[in-house]
Image 1 (cartoon, rainbow, N blue to C red):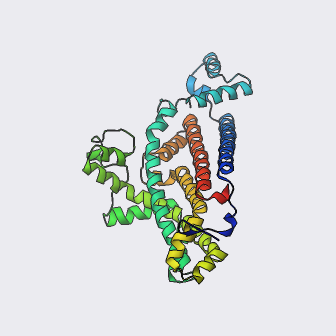
Image 2: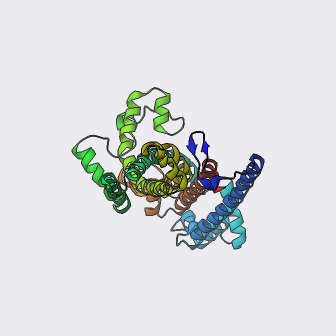
Image 3: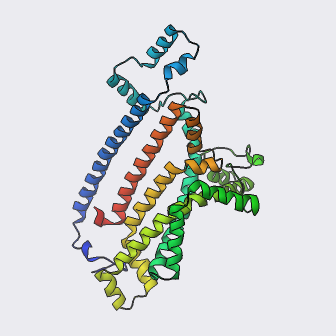
Length: 359
């Protein structure tokens, strides 16, 4: 057990490897992650291609129209390359994906990639605000619960976690709308912005909080924030359940280790021990859970966006599903999968930086 910059290190950290070997190990790990990332993305494209092949929707029929002649229909199939061998079609699909060509939406008649670029900032902004809420509150609740295991606060945290795990997210969203918007008028309702501000924002990043702050549009900024509160809170409650439980369990696991027992014997206070010694040692694990929750929010914001009329990727995909718009559905699925993979890869790297024991 040693003291590293005021923080007690767990015994298994010692002995440390030489700095040069750690650097080479880190670079090897990054190379390994890149290879894994490429293989995962290839697998993702195989899945989406298979879904397109197995889908009952006929893109040639959509292109030619219901009243097309057989010759027109066959011409459409040739135009789309549907008569080509399967490996050739898959190679063409991979090439299109790598160049950002995700096809044309049957609903909007616009490139799917352009549609996703337009709506995705809304989803990213909502998920980012939600995970900030969820991570801050979840870690705080986990620390409080670990300070007094099986106490009153621990019981409250367990109840909150249980609600976050078990209550359907769409039901919670409807409840929040009914209570805080329709009944108490504490927050704005569905949508991303009120109608009176709809044409006042000058898009720069697509993130309304940033754009309105950049241009000093105070009214639009506050209105955007008001619209974010309810959907972000619903998603935050869902994510903080896992974050608080994992933080609590990790801290309690560290409490039984030798360095924590020795610190207590030296008279280190519980709060000081928890915040400055134990929490940094479980930061890698907690960071991993937060990142997984963030990726899940990007993936699972579909119902929340539908309930709150949020013009993001989830609502776009929901509309596409009801319209049998296969290019849009598959494009959205691919983008969400890519985000999930990238977030996990970045998290893996950050977790190993924060906690060298994971290297």
